[in-house]
Length: 184
Image 1: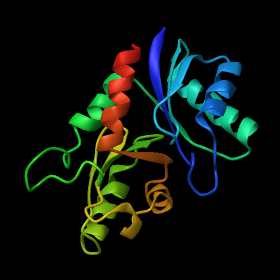
Image 2: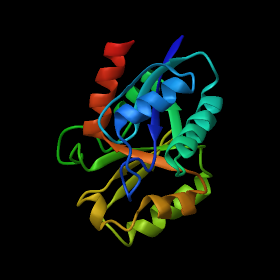
Image 3: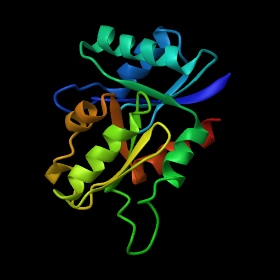
Image 4: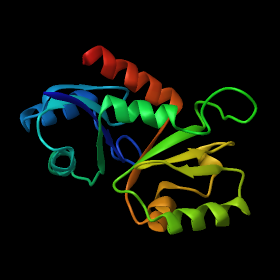
């Protein structure tokens, strides 16, 4: 059985409050195995044999049915989480890299059209200090001065890229990956 991480969007933000113990219970009742969470923001480690795309649909359904709101689910392996850290061009040390709390990997529901990504990067280069780059199923973003002061909200990114996404900063991703490796 494979170990996966589900990044659930819209958990414990904007009034969508869920206790992690309740989330674990709902997912266990829905047939997921070895369910645990990391932090209180919708990071769920579990074991399963099914296709990740089907797991995403089921996870979204469980959240909506059990908690009454829509969430997006991005299911990834430990290798994909590690790649979202290692391949992020804004993560690292030195003056050309950002703070672990400001540098994010945004897990996407599909690979966006490169023309749309290039247009977003070009347009935003004249507006803000944030830096963007596209990876494989991941948008890398250095918020530089913070998410709260950026025009690049999740809604803006989803509308421009025409796909869903949920972000985690480097500090969170490192902690999540460490727990995944302990669990595996």
